[in-house]
Image (cartoon, rainbow, N blue to C red; front, side):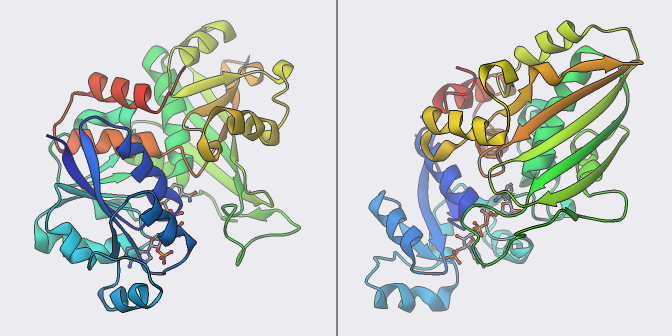
Length: 337
Ligand code: NAP
């Protein structure tokens, strides 16, 4: 028997999570929601997903547009085991009372404040904390990337303070209404950026300060990370530890990975929609100076949280333990091959 999962908000993250669920042997997509009858709504129907109106009054709008709609979000949620809320930033918190009323489990995304859920989640760092939980928040793309990297290093070596700078893609490729055409925006200008405290929502004992800047690109974020090492460690030992984690992909500038443009060109060959679920860490950026590890990584914002959502579903519905779940997600999404 497969568990039934609803996707409330079939946008950038929602459509990817829906497709990833469809690849799992133990879960299925019960339906997806939209507010607008646009090409994404039509494509969802074409792919075989049952479409529902995220805003009840809009059922009529879909019908008028000639798009088959199965009812309202509330009707969808009546027959599911769990909902993955992929609605826009802050809308998830507004949807929460509905999930409470219907008594169903819900996963929220990183655009929500951490108090929306009992647990802020990253599969490799704290899978166990989400086991059986009612509400879980999968942290944002940047926080997922930072958490995976820091957790993997911390598991093998004793670390001190972490400092990281995020060079952030300004918007997603589809967002033609907003953007930064020519400039670099310190975002935020004041210390710290929210990413450090957000990492601490998963890894509370990490001493981390982050700054962030938005730049005019849509492909990926880049992180420049410095981690104090408390013991004497070699650069090769760090590379070995990172290479052993399937959700981290080591790349080399010598292979032509000279920028995020090249990482995405590689991902275009590898996966549908150039989804890169792994942190792309430049192996040749790894350097240790005065006991401090420096490393640069690139993060595909649209897809990195997708495997985390799948593992969060398994933890909350107690379908598999951490190792089994991560292994299954990696296998089905071809992570680490
Ligand atoms: P998005 O592309 O704008 O998609 C949002 C979806 O929610 C759309 O399908 C929209 O439908 C639907 N929606 C609108 N109002 C709704 C409502 N009241 N209830 C339910 N659904 C509603 O947003 P996104 O980029 O996927 O972001 C979703 C969440 O993931 C946010 O919390 C964000 O911070 C987080 N996140 C985003 C990224 C990223 O880089 N994109 C990365 C990691 C995490 P219509 O289009 O029909 O209005």
